[in-house]
Image (tube, rainbow, N blue to C red):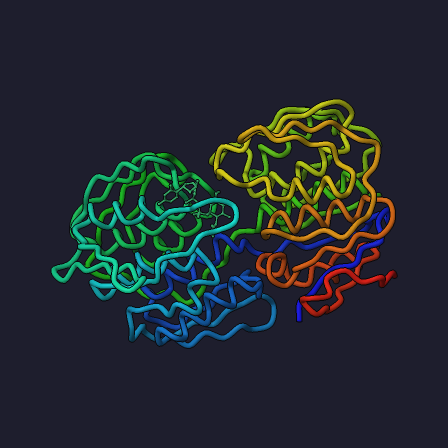
Length: 433
Ligand code: UD1
């Protein structure tokens, strides 16, 4: 059985929503807790599917992991194994980020090669080159990437060809216990990299340059256990609700956010003529807008416009006055949602990594398929603004990876949305609300 959302569009969103902790910061920080041999509470870890998968892998490796009320996770114990299981790792690419901490802890690690991904090839060559620079020997055996550094890792200067978020974090987690200094050049500056760095620093790691493109790490013999760490708010979830609020909100307050992390979104919204956002210390108040205009958006590594908000922005620009361009520079195949948006009446054409969007007056409900996590979120936004009923399929496989009970959160704000299970062969029903 699969799940889908059935959404009747055009119901205004109103009220308050608390944004949960960042999934993309939770994942590496849970992986890094392999290096914290104490009794740890991680706060602000939403029980989204990806985090549940990471918890299962940590349990398999010998830790005790328990989700508690209020988005807290209790992690304790020490890892007993360094080989991660294929069935779990294949569900989620971020599990490759267990390699850094396992290699640092055991001097060896074996992780299944992450499979392909719908939004692009997403190789791990930069991770591997980084580990090799730190002195690990890498082999591939029966589909597993095996890294060994029996005599320990040695600090090195590593220049990343691209500012990869995952490679920066993986290398950082390995380098905190290496001998000597590691310098990562062309490092990713994303807030989720900084959060992981701060977590490692709170355990006594010596790291400088977080949030810049050069990170310096002085290896330590050991780290000290800590008992509490709170993860940053999810900027992508916040951005998703902000865009929803502009398109179909009446008066929506999005709370528990870090506005600094959303600057690139705010700048683009302003350029499109959205002047009603009230940005405060930890919240944004959004009043629905009637009209906005087409703009150009290019996705870039942080502090550029995030690729993870590109599909949601495309829905917004589909309803803008005039023409817009979206250039996707981070992933090579991240326009799978375009075909689905066309089904809802959007006018979009693709040329390589550029999407040309001609604003339309309205979208019209139809059955559509979520092709990845953020594309799925974008289709939900489209369903909320579209005339009539939209069915978003494969919600459990994609949207649930990053949003907990999205339908309940949206219903509480006034949306007309429900979750329905269906047999895989019978995707589209004639169910209506
Ligand atoms: C992370 C985020 C993801 C986000 C992405 C970009 C998590 C769990 N996921 O993914 O939501 O969309 O950052 O902001 O935090 N690349 C290589 N070789 C490598 C590694 C990456 O060529 O070894 C390429 C990728 O194919 C991609 C680009 O670098 O084109 C950026 O990928 P990366 O920053 O590594 O993304 P992830 O860490 O996988």
